[in-house]
Length: 255
Image 1 (cartoon, rainbow, N blue to C red):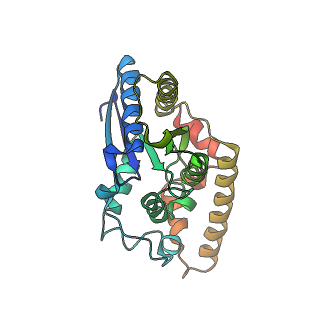
Image 2: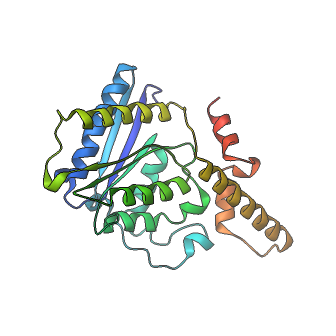
Image 3: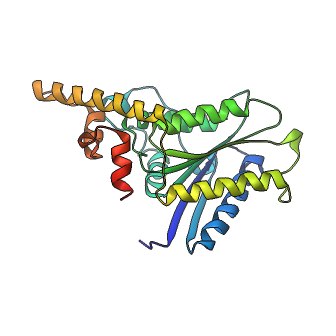
């Protein structure tokens, strides 16, 4: 892998795709990120994916992801492809317009299908950004929800921003306030991908709760050889059992 290249995947939950305010916001952010990175001698490879690209089915509430550690639908739609892209990229962005005071239906569908990651935290060490756009209100409700979900998946969220687009007014590249937000976000995002990560106390507490839970499941498996917990297996494969805290993982990876 070229050490002077970083990859960023953007997931935009809008059916209007590149013509949506959310899509325009993410494109503008990527432009700022690429300029910032280029000044440091790095190339950013990016990909923006919309619901039509995801091609995923709704969660059917079977619980297999929690019980066995995999989703039976992943090999039947585009979810396996999405998960691979998220795992392999250096930075991930989740972006949604405000629909009925919440994330869009497509973004909620995506998060539902990633529910198994809320316990196993496979995104530890991954830089993440959260964006929402709104005509009038509830943008904070969207960013708050996505911050919680993506944070529990383990990602280090370095950018979280709602942008008000007053009644359809298009994003203007010469908007000083918007440019300031994008440029500051680009610097923070780059710093995150460069290894300068700071996790929240809530994420640290959550990691320790999950770690304790999986240690108890490990004890049960050792006590009763017939038992097999899928999520515990994933925790083990990720190497998290040897750490007592989230901070230990990040400290080791930043060396």
